[in-house]
Amino acid sequence: MQQQTLFRHLNMQVQRKVNACLALAEKHFQRTFPIPEIHYRVRGLKAGVAYLEKNSLGFNRTLMLENSDEFITQVVPHEVAHLVVYQVFGRVKPHGEEWRGVMGELFGLTPHTCHRFNLESVRGQTFAYRCNCRVHHLSLRRHHNIQRRNMRYICRECQGELVPCSPNKN
View 1 (cartoon, rainbow, N blue to C red):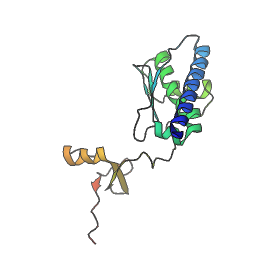
View 2 (cartoon, rainbow, N blue to C red; view 1 turned 180 degrees about the vertical axis):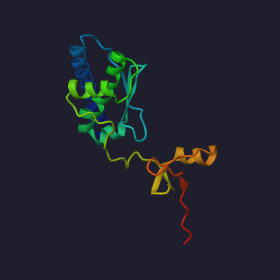
View 3 (cartoon, helix red, strand yellow; view 1 turned 90 degrees about the vertical axis):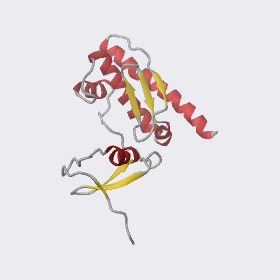
View 4 (cartoon, one colour; view 1 turned 45 degrees about the vertical axis):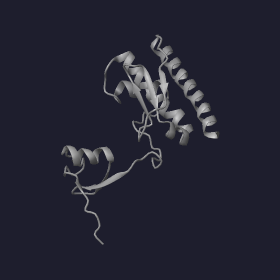
């Protein structure tokens, strides 16, 4: 029951942070912004997602509960900035100069494109694949794409194709 109480408290903080960010944007851009719908159905490694056309924000409940302070101060404004940028500038690069401007100049935050949360509690099963330079741990989805759909993944560093690591035969 304590986790449910914490979630309700954090949900109220998220709502307040969204409203505060939108108030800053309204003052700066001299226009109103509609209040977005908020849900907590984001899964996996993502902390949050902005659904631009739907004016909706999705957040990862588990990561919010585990990282509440940084989540409220960084992730929520990050996603609100995406909505503001879309409504003011239209479709632009997701973390381009417009988004960086809203994050830095308007919200007063360093415009990080990724969170740095511990992901152990949300990481699913992984599969070891190797390239020419190292071992990669692929998600179940990517593993199935390789096994069932004959998809290929290439290492960004060495450009080598990822191949399954041989299981130990000891």
